[in-house]
Image (cartoon, rainbow, N blue to C red; front, side):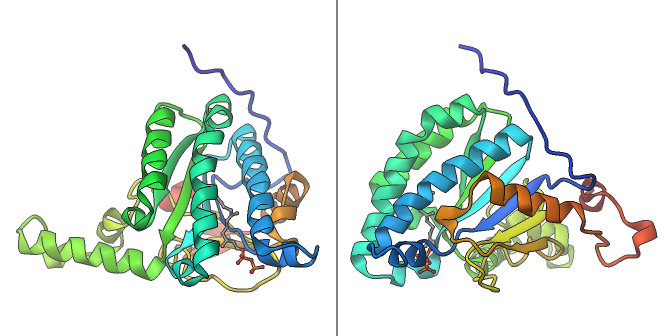
Length: 258
Ligand code: FPP
């Protein structure tokens, strides 16, 4: 069966458009508590935002979307909340397959994936496999993810390769280090969005966001839908990216990464 072609309709705000968007999905608990509900209802409602933002990004021709779904620190939350989040993840990985396929989305996970419960890990591998040939949006779920853990894991693998004589210590530079991160091939985020008004990075993609533009939305994640995404994109279109240089020699996002 051939893949349905997706009609790409990119909004034009008269400025740059991000190829890679990363999101710190924050405020699920507050959203629920503000409505007199248990925190877990916020996570459940947050799935609706994950679906809407993923399909919108796919339809707008965004190349990569990285969602911070579960951090290494999140394991410290109450046992019931962690169990709920893991079940939600498992269910998401099955229920969303038709939507991912219809929207030509490829799913990939980054993080200490082996920490996930066996059932969630199995569903994850299946969904990665099912969507592997899609060539539209790359949806990266950060699971059991921490940026410091990622750098530590990269250094361990690098040290092993040095010991095995596969690489020399003198070869280490920005680009060599990138190859040892969880995903060596996806370019850095152009735009980092955080919801719920908090001004923190929370150990997310510390290495990769060096030159990302940051946008903080006041809405909690369950309220972050198409209109809020468009507001972020409109704001991004006004940014002037200099990558440490001057405006006159500003490269385009892809030139800067080349
Ligand atoms: C922050 O809300 C969000 C999370 C801990 C994880 C995000 C999870 C989801 C959107 C649902 C699961 C997603 C997938 C892809 C299965 P918070 O609980 O920290 O909110 P608070 O700051 O208001 O307490």
